[in-house]
Length: 461
Image (cartoon, rainbow, N blue to C red):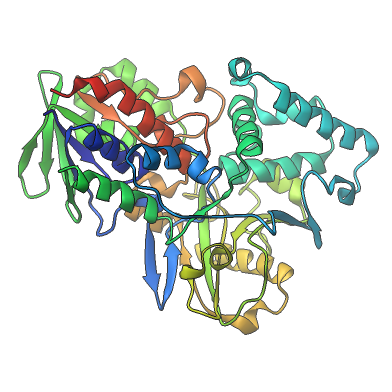
């Protein structure tokens, strides 16, 4: 039985661990935090179940997360953004896209341009998507419309999907996820909070004889003669294994867990060149009563939207955030809030450090609340409390400077240029969103887990 050590219990780590354990591998997983899941974790506060991040899952059981659960025979329950379907709150109007395009008051040529662009996306064959990998979304949209409002609206969708600006985001990735969303129509969340997914994967590991260690930080991945031989814990304990899988991300694995001295200068140059996605700030709002029947709202401000889409954080903190993603969690999952109360999470972009913009996160949170006040003018009367999660909080919990995705899905970092799962050290692999492809957010990590399992499944002794 081949021994596998896994560092981290995010969806990539716990997912590949569950698959390997189910196939007969001896799996041992080490998680530094008290709960599994990394960014996909859930915690309790005063009877409310709060996800660490602001999530909405593109494909639920029909996507990569569900495929792993299906393969290990441990399904969970999902809730979907249906009846009502997702809406955009744009300058006071509720818009169902693309049905309500006329409400945007765009010139006819721009409307036709959008429809023609969407037709090209949906008609592109799967084996042809890669030809768009090195084209940025802004350049692509500009073929069909140069209207700043059109650009800003599509910048919103990229913010939700990739947490990256339109002048960098890859059309190839965008086409793939747009098509998959249209085909599967399974937008939603897991019942019981996002933690339900990695928690079930961890149960799958244990069901098949594996071990899960929480509150157990790994100090380093041990390398001898260019081969990973196991992990050393913070207390000095050495745990040997034939295979080591890091769910910590490519850069933290290379720079911290292994150490740069074990890699060539050429490889380090590539790793150093990878750019992260943007970060978000999440304001979790506990409400005294139910104030809306909506399940998922994307707020788009009509004020200086074009400037924000281009310059992102460079102009400082606005009075109202330009773009906010708002899943009304308890309308999807009634277990998220006490009976009669409501929970929503509002997530929006924020700088990770001063080099990106003003990091006064209290003011960013207030800008998000002001956007909520435009949607729900009397919301302050119903707020029990708010709980804000900043990029600094995410960094302490899950690393990578608190960014959302990790290595961004931008031109030059997708398709053939996506980081490889195999590191240039024998028996060492990275599994997570950094090495995932062609999906949104956490489903990248699921894809990475499925693909790494296929590479390793025949190595069991």
